[in-house]
Length: 445
Image (cartoon, rainbow, N blue to C red; front, top):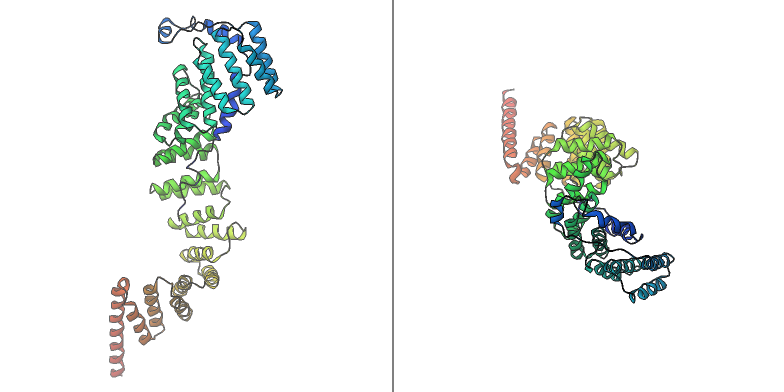
């Protein structure tokens, strides 16, 4: 049995390009006149000690005539008149501007290029923004963040990491989304150990706020723990996913992790929890549950799950599944059901293993002729791997049919196999003793 832990675990499901594109426009959509005033008072509001730690930037103003030109370019870009918008900005290049006005011009270039889906040009424009000295810290932060996302959209993960790390140095309390963004980049760079602190920080942040972590955040945490081969924490993460976002895949993966950790009872509990919630719909999921139940010696319930699954057409009625169902009924000592199912499995497969199982069931019921018929059918299959066991069973059946000569022949055949040599020798000695006893009794009479 066993499920693959790697299924749906290896790759985090957050669509990076969509995530990046969704927020980039926010930097340049509105020309932040108000943010200039905020930037001017930003340093005054901070304690003296913090002022020393950060580079003081005296923000300049955005003059009304410059604002008007930039706003016109934005309006043209919104109307998809990109060439006209770029002409407006190029005309503005001829005017003398202070550093803040230059930065906002580059910022608007980035906005136009991004809307035009000219991402390389947008990246270059944003790089020009941060290259300008003495820009407000709020503008620098927003630009670095957007620059990181643009590189991410281009799948330039190394290039995305640099501006994002610069952004982290400027921000006192990074958001959970920012931590996840950096964790995603580390993951794509296959730097899984570096991804973990950011994932944990993001999830801890929302938990502290009394909120549940987003599903895709937990999925990223799951992928990181898997890549780090940290199965104990992977189990804990999957518990969170299965509890907060109940889906069959999370319960099945949790069961697989418990199997990897050698915890079969927890493995079964995870699958049963999913089944009780009606989440297990696929054949593989139901069969896995049945196998786990058999592994914990709960055969009747395993048989019911298989039988009900076949009835509802969730489980295919084929030789393999019927053979497993026959095993379950046999172990549960439901011999009538076992014989019926195993006979159908043997008929479908024509394989020795199924005839052998059927012979075992008939032996349990002391139906010796039927047992002999099926064990002989099993031995005719050249691909049957339990030849030694089948010869032992055949000898037992023949002995109970009082056919000592053929029973002796079966045990002699079994003695040729190392795995059954000892048992076969014991039976041969017993048969020899029984023959002598009978000869003695016959002579006495």
